[in-house]
Length: 205
Figure: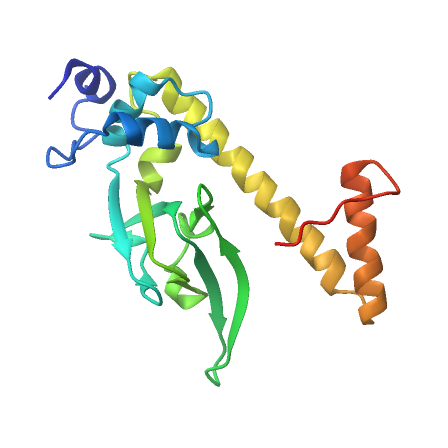
């Protein structure tokens, strides 16, 4: 184990190191460091952080079900590439697409301290997808060494959760309007507020 791993994870057994986990190569370090969840964390600390988070990576084909629980432990997912659909299925088997997550976005954070996500929603890979999983318990609790980059991860995690909540409120504001015209006007109003202009640009994607 490298010295940087020992420095982060010397916590009397609190951080169980996954020895089999491979260290990130230079290309992976650069890719990870560009993601919002790792914003402000020095590149040289990423490997130590990921070991401390008991992280692992899984690949999925299109349409595969993604589980956030491994060995009775809850995880937060980070989309490394591809995209994921969050789907709600009612008692009659009808499916509703609630939202989707793209590269760099997190998912499953809502269910870290609650019952299994399977009781509420399903996460499906919309394309060929690769996901980084972080232990929810390790992510929100700092070990006794109180590493600065661990605190930064917690800040980033809550920033991302706040942004997702704002997006959800905006979605509710638009979809709760009665007519299609009112929905369009509500959406345009939100965009004008964000861009601080009566003349707005709309993405085609």
